Image (cartoon, rainbow over all chains, first blue to last red; front, side):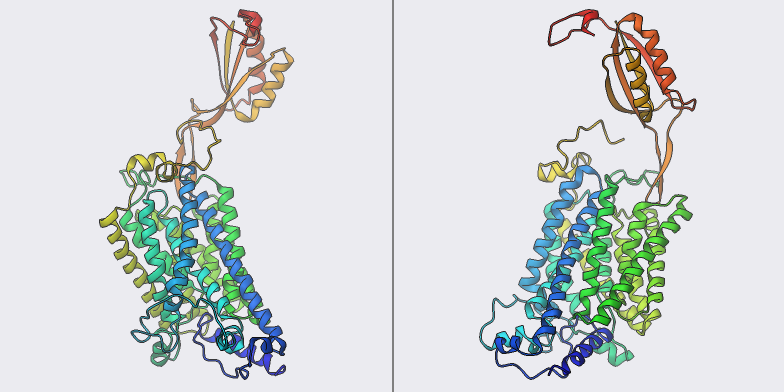
Amino acid sequence: MRSSLPVLLLLLAFGAGSAFAQDSSAVLTGIPAQPASYAEFMAGPDAAMFTVNNLWILIATALVFIMHLGFATIESGLTQSRNTVNILFKNVYVVCMGVMVYAFWGFNAMYPGAGGWTINNVFAFGGPIANSFSGPEIVTHMTSAYGHPFTYWTNFIFQAMFAATASTIVAGAVAERIKLDSFMVYAFLLSMFIYPLAGSWGWGGGWLNGTMQSMFGHAFHDFAGSTFVHAFGGWASLAAVMILGPRTGKFAADGRVRPILGHSMPLVAIGGFLLFFGWFGFNGGSVMSADPQMVSRVIVTTTLSGFCGGLVSAFVSWKVLNKPDLSMSLNGMLAGLVGITAGADVTGVWAACAIGAIAGALVVFAVMFFDKVKIDDPVGAISVHGVCGLWGTLAVGIFGDGSFVVQLIGVGSVSLFAFASSYALFYLVKVTMGVRVSKEEENSGLDVGEHGQEAYPDFQLSGPNL
Amino acid sequence: MKLVKAIIKPFKLDEVKEALFEIGVQGMTVTEVKGFGRQKGHTEIYRGSEYTVDFLPKVMLDIAVSDELVPKIIEAIRSSAKTGKIGDGKIFVLPIENAVRIRTDEQGDSAI
């Protein structure tokens, strides 16, 4: 048994690598004979590697969690000080709510298993996760008999930490003018029903897997979520921002852009670095085992792509805007990370650099483009997550061994679905509850308006925002 | 008694303070202010969009002194705050009707 374990792990890693890293329906071959009890399994030869794998995914979970602090700080820094409590509150709410609805509905809707589909490979009803296990269930969920090199609990919590991210991305794009209760209702519905549904098409073993495989000979490849997390969140944001409209004063009557300055560049930098830190778990954990060659490869491609993105956007902004722009460079780092997230397991090191470099350039032009067409996105969420998520997914068909057509169908369908459902959802919230705060509240800040609190009560204001 | 109000470049504050100490000024009040004169503003870039900053950061000193010190103070500030480039600032001199030291109730010149 001891000698067969490394083979099994390699199979796992390669199986995951060539299809869907986060696909829990992956059929495993060579599963060891089912142990009689958990105690017997833990006393056996497979326990050590199982523990290592399980531990790595749990560490990765914690790393993904800290990305929520990254989002909170980067969004606070890029907006005005009078909206800081509101931004932070939304981030607290989204991570708490996101994981709860994933436990209550999302996990089972996203990973229905072979027999769990309501409409085959397109839609599955969700439901609460297991409460606890006893008797033989412990063996089937807590040992390698579960079909993964980690337990059911680990599988759930790692996926749950991802789930809240899509709504967090929207939170940044709609900042400084959205009504809090409206956002909370919208984010709840998006996280509970829309995100798991789109995810099920790929990671849950839906039509982007089998149907694409039989039609084009290639399954859709999204390693850790350029499409299912980032493009989804980015295009959902675009729909929300189109209905919500720009912040008051962002665009002058003659069409000129009047930038509304973020209040803390140090917070933006902390956020950018925290997100990068969390990405080691976001991509590294998506290997779905601690397989040394795969985890190290993924972390190298991820890191180099992110750094290339940062460098290129720094120089592109220097060339295009005549000055090296800090917040653009940080956006560029994140753009490189978003870009490599689809193909971190199948692209070579230098291809990863190219993907990051192109993402870093794209993000600068995308930010300027959305300003030009009067789409007001204070944090660049649509550019970083939408545009670069799209690019990274397509890049698998260019630099990896994926099919460009399949990648295009996958990212296109998920993006369109995210945009359309977000548009419908946000419109529904608009006509029932309203989505914008009043002009007076926008001028005096959402901190006092929505929360009756200030982020910096000790600061003496030296006058109006000059 | 006179109130000398000087608006200077922020990075000159320490030099000006030293120069004022040297001629015997015992106290002052400093405020961070923003404004412009002939210098006008300049352009900055935020995430790809240019904008003009009309109000530049300056520091304003308020110094209450007896009449005979005024020429020395003006000279001290003028020489220590001067860079020769546009935007060095202005000095205003205003009359003071009365001054009161709260702790002792001294009035007039002895209060400053």
